[in-house]
Image 1 (tube, one colour):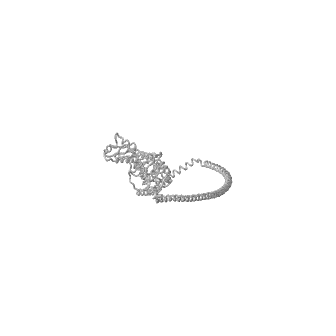
Image 2 (image 1 turned 90 degrees about the vertical axis):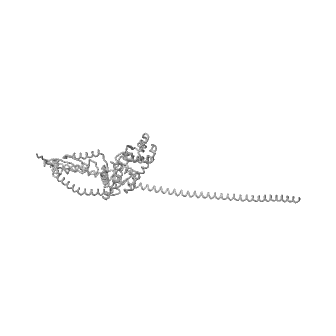
Image 3 (image 1 turned 45 degrees about the vertical axis):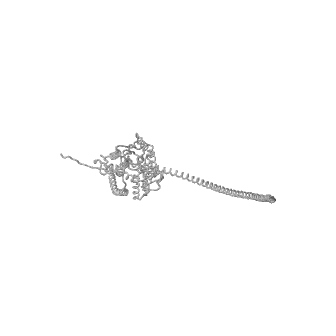
Length: 517
């Protein structure tokens, strides 16, 4: 029992000792922590005070530096103002000197003007005296000769005219024959060589396009219920659809090749798709219009590439591409412009001119036809405006303005473009012309010949390429016949517009007829 009590007592004593030791350890630990904390706080306070002092010092230094910079800037501004003031004073002094010099010059000019006025007055007086002396001499001569001045002049001119008419006609005929021998051969050689070096197929564009159908049942689907499909196609494309008894074919008719092409592609797309109804027609039409713009640009790019032309504005290239869908008397406008460009380049090379510039002028000479249905005015005026808008060379602008003779040609290239334009348009089959215009042109040509005195009758032959003038032999001699030919030629060149050239032949024939009985 005593052992148990002793053990308990030991445990209690151990616990008390443990509690006391633990308390002592905690006390010393808390004391140590408090001292460390207080030391850290004091250290932090010292650092804060130091930072405050450093910041104050830095602020003072920064303020001092800013003050120094400001003072320096103020000094520089003052120096600049002083320099400007000196410069203004110098300029004012220069202006005063210049003003003084101008005043002196003005005085000198006034003095010179006064002297000139005096001299002019003296000259006028001298002229008056000379005129009076000349008049007195003329009056004296008229009294001596017995003829007035106008009558004497009329007599002299009549005699000179009678004496020189035959000599002048003979001289003109000899010079014309000599010029024809040289000019005709040279011109023929140059033009033939150019046309040989550039040869293109001739294909006239028509106003209709035929679209092939897979079968005749497709005609009914294109017409649609109560004709709604064909009405929709005609309404949105602006093209007439002709559906007749022709097997497996539909005809598109329009004078606008661009509309006709868009309608053709739209209709072919509808046939391939198989779904033909108004909504689908409108969708495909919008898609084809977008694709056609890209196609037009490709036509313009390909044309510029074929001709070797560079530095063309993208908008101008698109306008060039539109020429593919324009026609002139059945001739494709873009193909015509390419031909003119090629011929202009060849002729320019033969004559030693700028080939690239000649091609550029030839390509753009009819550029106004691409948008003449959108803008008011002739295609020449529109083309000039387009060329100026895209800053083309003055030679190109003049070639566009003068290729129909509306404006005077100011360069050799302008004349070359006009020649190439006539060559491309006048080749057999290149263009179609209406019967009315053809007959009207021939009638005007014959009227020019019939208006001349001494002409019995004039006939236009060779499809208007030659005018044969028959004169009255009893009124017109051989020399006068040459004068009539020249007069008719000048009237044709002045009054008529025509492609190519017109040969004028004057025929003087004397016949003696007797009838034996």
